[in-house]
Structure formats: structure tokens, C-alpha cells
Image (cartoon, rainbow, N blue to C red; front, side, top):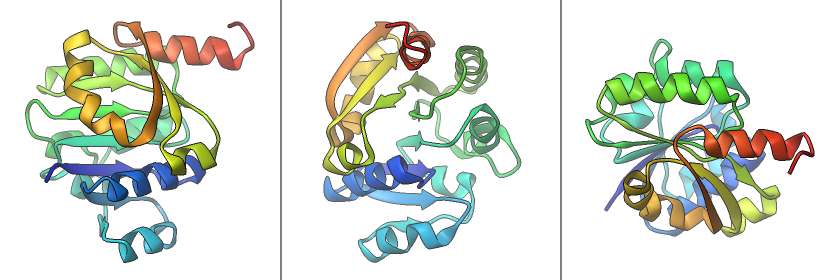
Length: 179
């Protein structure tokens, strides 16, 4: 059974984490507030006391956090996920972050032997809970193929824009009304 570390259980992240449980993944969840994880734990998720603990032994770590600062903290901060991740595992950033942040975190995680996918999502929380999100992906095509089994539970449509950073770039321009 594939293991997923899921970090960030806000309105979108909670439904996404639930989809991984529904699909039969072994899921460890982290959120600043454990209360947001209680029903997921009751459904079989393991509580992780830190991003590092969520990442430990995971084949993929998926983040859905508020912004660049939160993303940097959960990947690279004290008790961050990256140091605990296995070489070759997937770092899937579903959060809305800045283009530069996606490039910087990708460079750092890649230097550690990890595969970074920038993968912001569009859709409502109900779509997240139903696995009907649209993913705006920036990744090497081979990396995207490796990630597909970990994206399948949450996705209805995958739009691949090119290299890391392009999914985030499209998402940001779309949010500004430019696309």
C-alpha cells in the first residue's frame, strides 16, 4: 500500500486527504490544529505531530497550505517534511504559492533527491471531497507520470503546462483574471 503524507487540512485539504483514504492509501496527516484531523483519524488516517512525521516513510507528500511562508515552513522549516523524505519520493505542492517560491522550493528539494511537482488546484471544497478538482501542473513529463497514481484520487482534469513553475504561473494569472 502506497503511503501519503498530507499536510494542511483547511477546507480544500481536508476533502483531498479524505480522497486518499477512500482510495486505500496509507495516509498520515498533519495540520496545526489536530481537531481538524479527528474525523480523518477516525476513518483510518494516522496523526502526525509534525510535517517531518507525516513525511517519514511516505512515497509522496502532498501540501495544501495557505501561502509561501506556510509552504516553506512545512517543507524546509524546523521539523519540515523534506529531511525525512526518501530519495526519489514525490513532493506535490497543491497550495497556491508564488511562482518564485515554486522555483526556489523545487530547486532545494531537487537538490535533496526529491521530485517536486507544482500542482495548484481549482475547484470548490465539495469538488475536493468528490475527487473532481482540476490540477494545474508544472513538472517534467516523466515526473508527472510518476505522480499520476498519487494525483488520481483528487483529480477530474489534469492540465500540464510544462516545467516546474508553469502550473503555478497559470494559476496565478487565472486568479488575476488574465486567463
